[in-house]
Image (cartoon, rainbow, N blue to C red; front, side, top):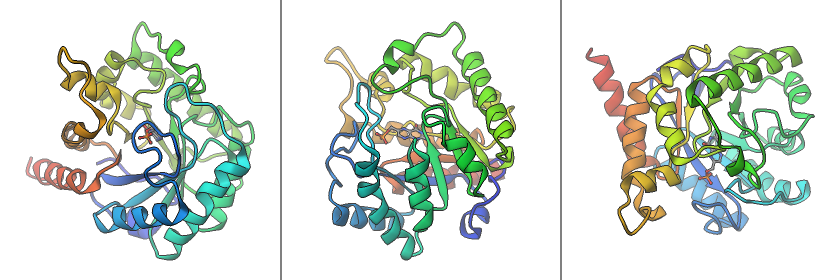
Length: 284
Ligand code: PMM
């Protein structure tokens, strides 16, 4: 595993393996688990379960980013996530907040979130970078080309690895110019975001090229369409509920390739895969 970003609580910064981030979408419409944990109480219970099953961090999100999704109001997003972040944080569970909005991130930091996960890498909300410079939490900057409503049209690449690497490098420059220490930043290739199925595999196969940017990497493949496609047959893509073993295979390979973290729906098997990768790499 590569280094941790600075600013993590000790319980995470002391880990000598890939970090397992459990996904908790408090939304009615996320592609993968929308509607399952929509009430605050259900979401808190799910967060506890993710932690008990081995999630190092619970990633709480209140806005769906599925292809074609429309934006929601900031008040609605905050109302979904803040009570969940507060309750889980109060129980000592490390929580990251998955949001593109500085206002939502700030509200969640107030109640205990330890990390910000921004799928737009600071491109969606002009207030995000200046706000980040005023705090000291670690920040996940994902590769993003535009909102979910139009992202499929933006999935055009001549050389996906070179272009994603260059675009992430320019986010790092923007972050540094805004006063955010690059050592706090985790980069993420944004699998499935403005990427067709075939664009995701070269990014996974060339994680080392992304690592050359000097930041820890997060990989979020869990249940995504490209896994359904690789497992599918003439009947079409493998359904969502039957993609977890493929996600676990990605976890093992990404961990062995040195990924800092994986973002997954079912944490137990991912954690096992991470431990296998650590033992395997440790014996080399
Ligand atoms: N994917 C989704 C949402 N948030 N955050 C990061 N950093 N990386 C991702 O790949 C990512 C993300 C969409 O998936 P979901 O609906 O299963 O949460």
